[in-house]
Image 1 (cartoon, protein in one colour):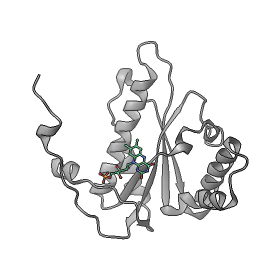
Image 2 (cartoon, protein in one colour):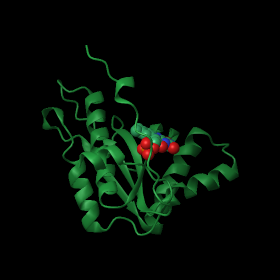
Image 3 (cartoon, rainbow, N blue to C red):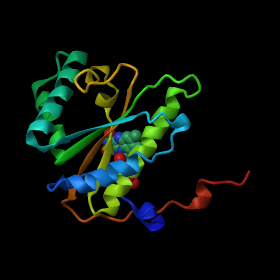
Image 4 (cartoon, rainbow, N blue to C red):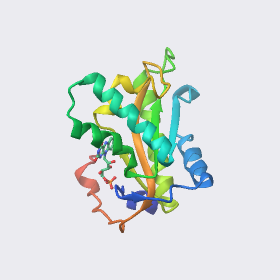
Length: 183
Ligand SMILES: Cc1cc2nc3c(=O)[nH]c(=O)nc-3n(C[C@H](O)[C@H](O)[C@H](O)COP(=O)(O)O)c2cc1C
């Protein structure tokens, strides 16, 4: 397992097949084992799979972008609509705000981030490609209503999933001593 973690790489070039239902469930189970202060389970994962669902997700992106900038040029609009089609499946990962007096929202965001890491490690381990993206739309509040989210929730990522269409390239592993000092 430690080698899988050390050698994980992202993959932005993704094609069908998407993770099977069975594999997706395993990956989500891994996500749901993220560390979690007070056991709040402050997470939601929204899965978009297939043409119709990805089109719908693209239209949420476009509508949100247009609300921010009604003059968005037509070329950019077209590009935006197609963004989710960069993979056969996109999972929106959300940190739900549980408003617990002892757990600030940043800890819910960290927990959801750990969940995403478990999810993408699971994808890598099962032979799928994954790419964690955000971009301005993850922080655009107009995305929340169509996704059925509450205003205080935080989108932590759009996780693109599928089968790598190119060979995954190993990445250099940073030197531990450059990032660690003994206190
Ligand atoms: C919270 C978060 C948001 C990210 N958003 C983007 C993004 O919007 N676009 C992008 O190209 N990479 C984004 N990345 C980086 C990629 O997911 C990926 O980690 C990076 O390209 C390095 O590749 P590697 O994971 O193989 O080391 C994001 C990473 C994190 C943790």
